[in-house]
Length: 295
Image (cartoon, rainbow, N blue to C red; front, top):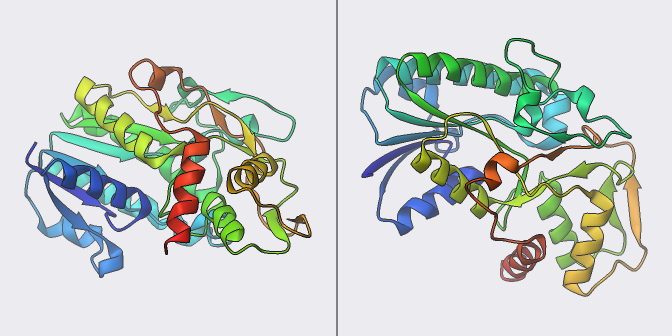
């Protein structure tokens, strides 16, 4: 592999891919709206073939954006449509498409449920309601990926659950928890009642798992997660434990804030058949605490 294209290379996931390829001496072409370059404009004029294309360009912005600005997030539908048309027109050979755990039916993730989501819970011929416009966009992207394959484009689809890492934006719970500990806030804020559950996996493991799937040519959708349910209250306790610190006035629950679905955790059997995560949550917390200390 000599040359890779990454759309959205300035984002959290993109930065991790850049590091991965840089260490291997592989040239990367990046297109990112953060640099004033809309990938849709790129698709209109560029006809180059790459050894691998990684499509990450999307509007997300955390839970508040997903719930409070759904039309902005719906722009992802346009981005993905232009992307897949470009892959077919330019005869790209291999494409990584990042879907999301948000694509799963919300009815399987309600309070009181403990469904470990498996890949077959999404049937593109019988779609159930995903999570807001972000989930709809990712489902649509997966649907388009199927057609791209029929045109000869090898398309690898991944459904990451709660990916985290040292450089993640503060719009997300994990880095926000770490920052509050580093700042030693008197009152530790958690959105909702804290019982909402997620499945946390370090971004380094996500990158390694995707690249191994490409190497093995596994084109069916793959869940990326540890398969370990963890509530936000439990996550906070783990962060306190690793940091050796607790907030003086305890935890403040912000029930006025959006929380999303209540139980989102994956059956990661397919991923484990070819890749086992290497970074434990405790190790991930240590890395992030050290990163924020040194900022």
